[in-house]
Image (cartoon, rainbow, N blue to C red; front, side, top):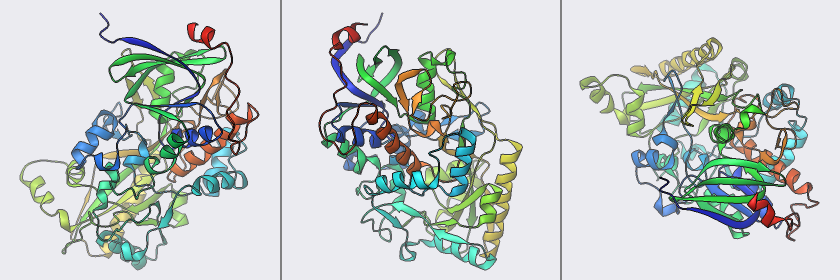
Length: 493
């Protein structure tokens, strides 16, 4: 017997957007700015800044899917993704870089989509950057880990650069910035929660948080979305539905809704940036958990060509404990030296894609083994990290065996043909004019650069494309006029 009460929302929205991260919130801002009736659906909870979990254990369980652990089928890789209003921008460090020409050229060549070029994308980058406060981490805000990173690079003659972060008024010298990975209580980090999402809501967009979408049905002239909202089954209807649930979320929803039969490329081309952390034990306290725990990145073209980059990074005690294999006295002794730890991560630009499927229960099955090429790139990076730590006189070096996959991309790849892609140049799903996607799931490959800013930029482009279908521009504030008088018939169908 169905324990959920079913209700139908008779309101016919212009757009339903599933997901509130770097894509969904940006789309909602621009569409609502043009007068569209926008409904945002988010599986996670909408938190005020003072409501974010106070520690990393609760942050993992409350702000991420499956407690922060989505494993690959071989259980050797862990995928992290946000489940909270604001999406992954709540749990990441808000590092915002534009793609270089290498990434843009590779994207264009792989997909055949012409807008992946410097001239076009810079316009969209500039537009979204106008709504964010971006700062390069100054040396005055470096912590001990960053200073060791810089010393090692300089001794070995390696090129480094400051990271660009979305932040405003963050007193890095005084604060424990590890809390940023569990939401920023200071409203400094430029996540969607303090930028595009509140702007969209102020312009009339409606947010339904804790809404678990179960099925999407594409009809003639409209889309119906079915799900459970705070224990109650609901059906919502809109002229268009935009999936912005990320690589795993958007792909999984389409697969569970039966679109795989018409989209042979759905679930293929899944990429990520596998990351490997190496911890060095120093003689003196480093206190890597204090201040701006990420400040520097490698800027050496040799590394870029080899398919990896290096960043100074760290984690809370629970996260560091998971990186160390073993248990008992040796593990306890290792954690007792937490304040003496320095850390550098190797982020790999993966080469060989994986697949995303769903089983008979509708649960995700992620097949993403590390290829020989990926392992070679990781080893080249780790070898460089060992050299850096030796240069700063580390007394012991520990390479974590755990592979953490961030920046999940692909599964709904953009391209020109339905035979080998899911989304076309106008961000519509092939063969389904009322479905669109502009999040990281449409990426044709891994860029080797943090993807968040480019997701925002291409979502701005997608909003322009969608509005252009109805003769509207983003600057116009008059209500959109494409909702038809056949609302009752559409809802009943």
